[in-house]
Image 1 (cartoon, rainbow over the protein chains, first blue to last red):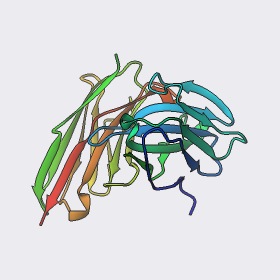
Image 2: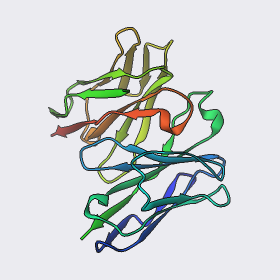
Image 3: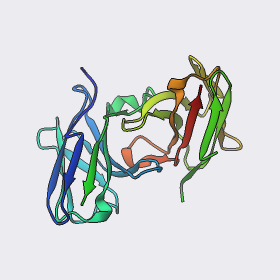
Length: 117
Length: 113
């Protein structure tokens, strides 16, 4: 399968715990994006990487959130000291830098659904 | 502020019927407009992508239109099937970076037999 892969698909944890999600993009894509989506809403941008460089962070990304892409391949999104409001679907997407020139879309994974008890 | 508004928020139609979903945007500068289909519990999947110079694009039973002057787009679904039940999200790009995408809230379509 050459699509975007996210793990785990579901995560249930108690408030105050730390959680980490992983995203494996399409192998030839150098851009990787993280989004958050709550029920009935469209995705909201969190951050994106070009190779290993984190180029932009949304104001939604509080200091409890950190994302890494150490080798420019897979990425992790960590949430520390989780709160009820963190319950959402966390989506990862990837694209090639050249996709913009040829108007190709971002390719999304199926997300990690986080539930905070 | 860049915004994308979709209507209706939800829609129920009978199998075999046609429907049209609307998207209005205030995004500047405009680069392209995309429609995505999102099944429950899955990630969005691209249906169409249109640039400023394109006013219609089809993908099977899905036809998207774009009026860049009025900043409106529509997604027309012909001969709906049960598998069309999903959320349809309009996304407008203002540039080539991830933070330049503005997502609409989606239209939730339910197709009933």
